[in-house]
Length: 249
Ligand code: GLP
Image 1 (cartoon, rainbow, N blue to C red):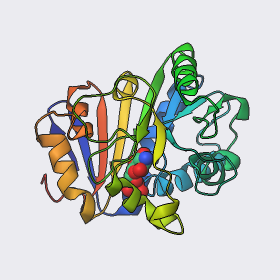
Image 2: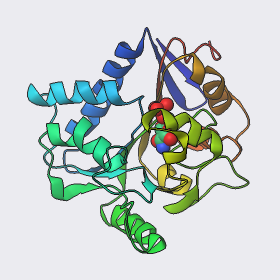
Image 3: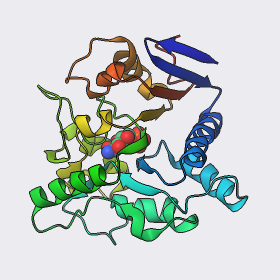
């Protein structure tokens, strides 16, 4: 089922698997239409099913990653790339090592950079030099964060360093031994970086996300709900499972 919220198209699918299939279909179509373009990838539990589908589609030659350039949304700081909780490790093991992607064209912020501000500037420059993103994939945090852009008094612009909210550390503690092991800082694309993408594909599943999806899509546009800025973008597609759509249907 397809609904419209302003300029945002929302697909509501039966369950997580159907959400993942729909997302894989949309993202792979875009890659096949623009096989040499740059694409933005995301981490978290939400896109895992979509990544599994993309791996399967790649095996069957239904999607070709060989010409694309990739930029990930964010990375913890400090964290080393071989730490199995780093987003680098996540992307390599859950997608990039399993598809025909050119490793030289993968960009993920370096969570071990000696100079974090320099890393942020260079990341943004590399993204701009690639010609910009064709499609950015997004999940959404329980507090409305996109990438690691936490609720705040203003919308951030370019890639920058952030302090993580306690609630985000707690939500992400499930992937670490304890909440104390979750790094307190991160490097993230800015809201401005994300908004410059030609198109945006946001996914959410589960009852726990219903309230924030409602606020993001139908509430006031405010940096206190970072995802609400997407209401100002001209080409956003949201794919939800039924539970995440409960607040808007
Ligand atoms: C994390 C990531 C986000 C992700 C979000 C939701 O903190 N930085 O990019 O979208 O939280 O995660 P999940 O998909 O596991 O709910």
